[in-house]
Amino acid sequence: MEKISMLIDQLVNVMVSFGPFGGFLLVLLESVFPFLPLGAIVGLNMLSFGNLFGFLISYIATVFGCMASFCLFRYLFRDRFIHWFSKSKQDTIKKWMDKLSNIDFNVLVVLFALPVTPAFAVNIAGGLSDISDKKYLIALMIGKPAMLLFYGYIAVSFVDSLKDPINFVKVGGLVLVAYIISKIVEKIVKVEK
Image (cartoon, rainbow, N blue to C red):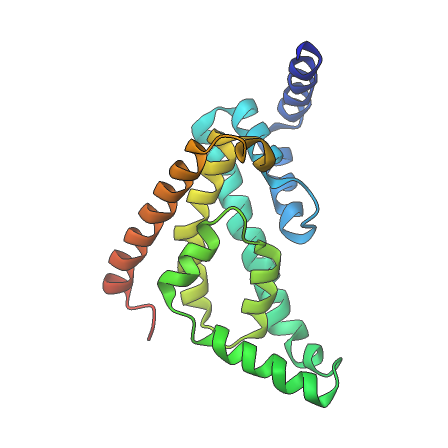
């Protein structure tokens, strides 16, 4: 246990030496390279820069990274992507893209809020679909805080959180809050139009 504590202290010192830009860059890279451990990066940001500032760094970086990934697939790869598949698979992909294009705003918010949702896959699918940029961005901005708070406060590692059932209640509460906020914002901003 002491070795783990020393390792965490060393990682925090490295993060602090790079400053907030280092933490921002790591979260941004995770948006492009999903094999990086987002939970550990968010946890390190919050340990290194404080709960509020570390959270803000992670939040801004993940929103920026997810939108960059979304736009990359929307504006550069969408037309080329479908042609990589056979005609029969193209029809299946188009059906899935149609379903995603019509996804309910609140469901999209919940997808972003759940820590188990692979954001990279959602970004790619969103970019390939006809979902509006506005709807996607607002859902992303409302849903991501719940997921980041889960990673930052509940556990550095999602696997460790699975051992304590109370964490599921906390995640459920965060997802419920994101859902309620999405219902309020949906009425005010009218994102479905």
